[in-house]
Amino acid sequence: MSDIHVAILAAGQGTRMKSALPKVLHRVGGRSLIEHVLQTARSLDPATMSVIVGHKADLVRQHLAGQPHLGFALQEPQLGTAHALQQVEPLLKGRTGTLVLLSGDVPMLSAETLRRLRETHTAAGAAATVVSAIVERPYGYGRIVRQGDRIARIVEERDASPEQRKIREINSGIYAFDLAPLFDALRGIASKNAQGEFYLTDLVAIYRRRKLPVETLVVENPEEIRGINSRTELAEVSRLVRQTKNEELMAAGVTLVDPATTYIDPDVQVGADTVIHPGVVIEGHTRIGSACEIQAHVRIVDSEIADRVTINNFCLIIGARVADGVSVGPFAHLRPETEVGAGAKIGNFVELKKTTLGPGSKANHLSYLGDATIGANVNIGAGTITCNYDGEKKYQTVIEDGVFIGSDTQLIAPVKVGKGAYVAAGSSITADVPAGSLGIARGRQANIEGWVAKKTKGKG
Ligand code: UD1
Ligand code: CA
Image 1 (cartoon, rainbow, N blue to C red):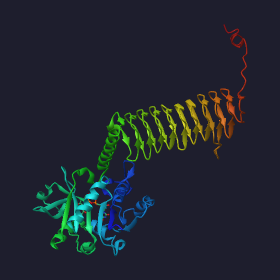
Image 2: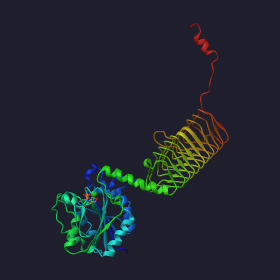
Image 3: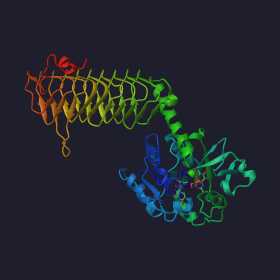
Image 4: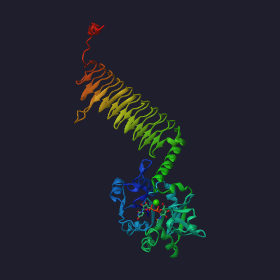
């Protein structure tokens, strides 16, 4: 079994977010901050993994309820990062090895850095290893104070002298600790500082005094250890996460006409030679095939789009499956549990919900198709509506292969139109139409000849 343990600090309120939501539940690239951290942490394959919760602990617990093998420690009240780490002591009782401590608000940390942290820490036989970085704007971070080559201590921004504030090497808040001396040493930390908190960063000076070896790992790319404390930083990190995803896609053969306005979540897959136009948003677990064209201002969420599909401007597609060669939009709305068969065509102002539209079928203009099963090569005329709801329940409409539905038809469900049947334009269909027949259900037209002349007689 692995002797690596992971703990994640997530008890703080995040005052500067000015939010009712705990900071670690804010989202970047379609995932909460803490989910990013957990996903990276799992790359270490740890023996145990714990999250320290405090502020709105129940919300954080609920949010992570689906995560396997995760322990929780409650920090109440929140008296600082050293105090936070003390709360996992009971969860690690009797354990030895290395504890990797991560921050719930540092979402871009790479698995590669974690791997190197473990390696550096083990190779040096260190009691503690601090991940640091050299940055342009160190403001707000703890500074790494060195004596010669070696780290001597960490000074927080608010406690730093003007000289120390000039130091550009910062503490990332990510560490590896040997479990053996850790919890005893934490008890030795005092709260005599500008914030009156128990600072975990004081551990470095304590270890140096006790002659316990402390190492540093300086990361090359300081972006990956950026912590989020404000909405501005949230937006900056979002942009970086997006940029990384966009570059990955372009390297894999996807054309992004304007990467600066393209928003694609990290888990989205896109095939080669697909072209994505400006203002497109693709979220969740969406998969898009190759040689597709996604026109400007389309949003696609948790959907599967096959190959050679065209999505025209201003479409919203959520939880739908679209097969090869389909054309959708502009201004179409595909809602959850919609399936569109190969070569089908969905035009402007068409909405589909829990509906299957068979291969080669067309709904080109102004339609609502809900709770419907529509076969292959069906023509749905302009303005067709499935009346699926009577105010209480939803009902099914079945339209079999090769049917022609004339324009402005209402299909009052439950109702079925049999194979190859025709429905006359303007019909309100309340009863099944048998295969091969014509269904017509509308008032008959009467022309009254000479009516206009009679009406105007004597008015001249
Ligand atoms: C901390 C470090 C600082 C480092 C920075 C990196 C300390 C004293 N300072 O500062 O050196 O440069 O991170 O981002 O450690 N938390 C708790 N319980 C608490 C307090 C905080 O769980 O009582 C959690 C927060 O939810 C957060 C993390 O610890 O996930 C860091 O806390 P935060 O208040 O953001 O510390 P910084 O001031 O950023
Ligand atoms: Ca922070």
